[in-house]
Image (cartoon, rainbow, N blue to C red):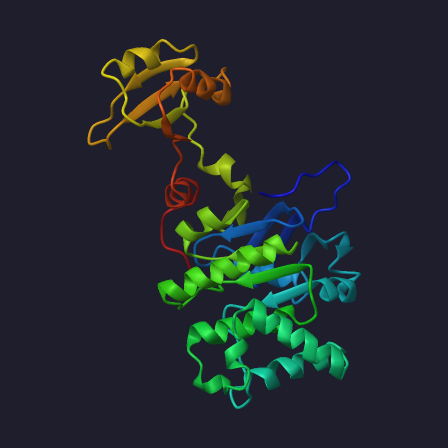
Length: 323
């Protein structure tokens, strides 16, 4: 659950009217969005949509033609050093010193960040524990699987304890088990108070992982906001799925008699005890749930129908060949 904010909260990332072109190709066109602190924010778009260009601008690796980007209130144009102190960037294609051991690799970067010898040992132990790589500290990087190398790369961006992690396709090329383990590490980092901005093509995992999302297509933002706002259906009557344990034969009639339930039916090919409800949008779903509980029938689940992120993505993005 993301934290609550007031009007004075400074966004972790604030992008305003970001515009950039490469020769005759306009990569970004007035891109604007914000990412709040201590959240996990997905960044989604087709190939060529402008995701990597945006990430490079946030990381101070690209000076945009127009627009402003701030990280925790610091401008990437005029306060680049302050920005770099608070971010950790993991690119989609990373080069690693494969002749080094895991410990030597992390020690090299910790030294580059100015940590003394004592600090480096403690920090490396901590990030290896966090990424579940304790037993691999003396292994050569060249002998690690891609999933293990991804963990080492993530450990590298953590050595200076950044507040914001910028991850470009971190699960690319990983097998399903490695992806699941990586996502759990990211959840733990969020619980520790990190803000995580993640670009990915694996939409099903982002839907479960992220608090909020920005969808970009052809250099323009198509949606930016809470994941729930994107996935909740926009039907005239919100629909909920209700599962009851041992419902009576007249369950449909009982449900339709509840104030706020417009219609109730047993859906085709439904699981036992499952009902499809249409709710008056003016009524509070929690109040309706309390009325259902008042029927005295044990409830297994009560969930609003949601789009799949894949469907929402296709609805918002343009079809056709991209260059």
